[in-house]
Amino acid sequence: MHDSTTRLRDLYVALWNEPDAAAQRAAIEQVFTGDAAHVLQPPEETRRRAAELRVEAAFEARGHDALQERARRAYEEFVAPGRYVFRPLGEPTRLRDLVTFRWQMVATEDESVAAVGREVLLLSGEGRVRLDYQIIEP
Image 1 (cartoon, helix red, strand yellow):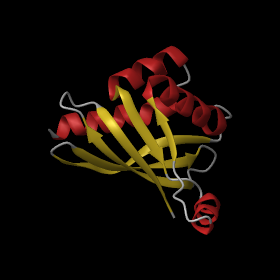
Image 2 (tube, rainbow, N blue to C red):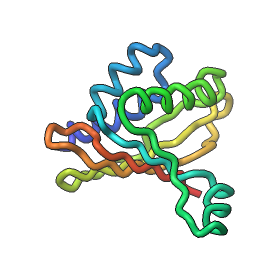
Image 3 (tube, one colour):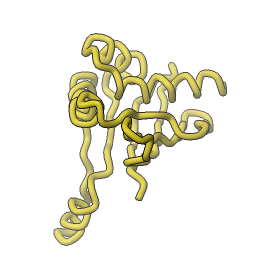
């Protein structure tokens, strides 16, 4: 189970660094179910404004097309310009159909860490992600 969990983590992180759209799509289809949801914790400013309105703020991408659009935008903003790369951080943890791991966005120039995130994944019976909560750590 450890090898499959590490492989899932590595495939997940790699798809955010993938420059080729077709290869990125293939990775998304390998990692996620067709109706998977990726729920992203929005930036602090957005969460603060939502709290003022007494609503919950969350960004969501559902299905392979939306997931690819999300991954492409992140790639174009952070990786394509050559400023950053995404890397796994530490070991993944699995409990039945729940997987969690951390990742970091590292500056290519000096290896400084620009961001750290945590993924909390709920897997389908076949081992693909059906629900992905992404939390950016302070």
